[in-house]
Length: 53
Image 1 (spheres, rainbow, N blue to C red):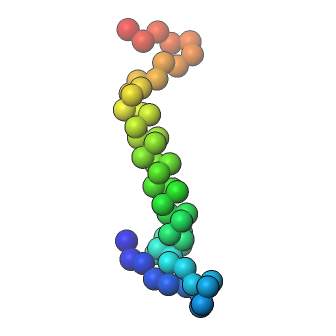
Image 2 (tube, rainbow, N blue to C red):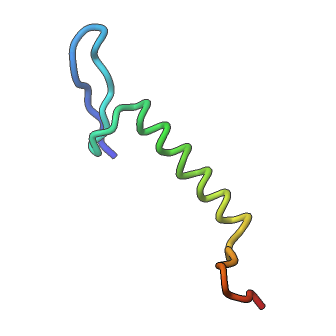
């Protein structure tokens, strides 16, 4: 995903094409990876009212 810079001086920051800053993109990536790890541990969540057999 392309990256560009926004702002000047101390306020200059990296911004991904998606519009997220580097920090926001890194945080989002960590959240997605955690969700994926959790779904791998529990691939078939049991729903209320249904029997998983």
